[in-house]
Image (cartoon, rainbow, N blue to C red; front, side, top):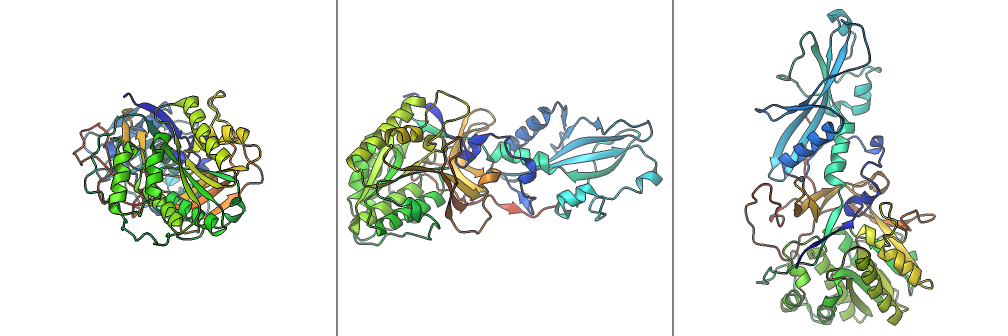
Length: 498
């Protein structure tokens, strides 16, 4: 069967705002970093994107064949008389941290033609003089780089170099604010052998659900007959964990609860059987045998271990005597508006049979919007269709807020090949959350153009890998890898700044 590629999370990487435009954030809203950013991409890909970023500014780029540093052509700052001219150029320095971990530093080098007595009046890098704009703006954390061996300009002296954080922020947006892909269709071929899920323990039938830390301010959303749509960044631990807590809170209010997952509706019987089971290893293995959705060769984050843990939380609540249902609402192979229509129809059908249930729906950012999308006036998201079809049932859509982290997802790499692995994920300015702050719901005064009614803040995101993965194999460049290796970092690592 042929794959259909669809943009499932056109938001912060899917979820939390990337679809609002890769160039929509004012650069000054990005906080000044205090440690080096380590990108979860191979160094050659990161440098390819950095080169393209500068070439798009109509600059010729040259590479040092020994150090692989990139240099741009130079340009004059202002118009000055001969003997007192100033030129600048970009320097891009690469550093490989690991096979899929890289640091890219972008500097602006300044060359001057002025006499030494005039040059001595200029503050040096790292100076704390009040008129040193670059120091005041970028802070001393990036002011200690040396520039021995950089190209010279005849008749000019390299006077200073400083980190160009606006350019680095643009690079960050290109590498970590990228739409994720949802892979629809395809053939399942990963065999089920001795299933092991990280953090999994076979429990007794009466085991209490692990609800986790509270989600602040969620109570107003927990109403009989209400539907809450949550934008899923896919492949994280944090969203399934917060969703489990919301199920626990709704069940504690004696509400009938429905968990709707972006799983093909043909797998509904397999999910129902698991939710009614004792949750043993054998029950889990049977689920993975019956549902080939979890055995796809290239998995996009919708079939992660976190989703299995969320499904287990629903099973335990049901075992405790709560009215809990699980709904598989996605399409098996449709794309575009046909997929949105099928997804909405499955949810509407369930709602009509269970008008009093509180329903929690997890799907990509684009799907859950109750408004429209800016790039296609004819595209009608699932959330919009639900709102129109259920006027008597309150439908609320939540975007995602978080701190920079990582998730397991599929993206196009620089060679336009699908790369399913652990990727960095960075929020847009309006969705940014300070690290180590509690998870919470913040409702808006009114929904915006995209139709979000509020935002669910999840904290720092960490990846949740697929339950089943292909056997590890050495990647052949530029072939995309099929799965993150064991021990992949939970969040993008940091390195001391230079």
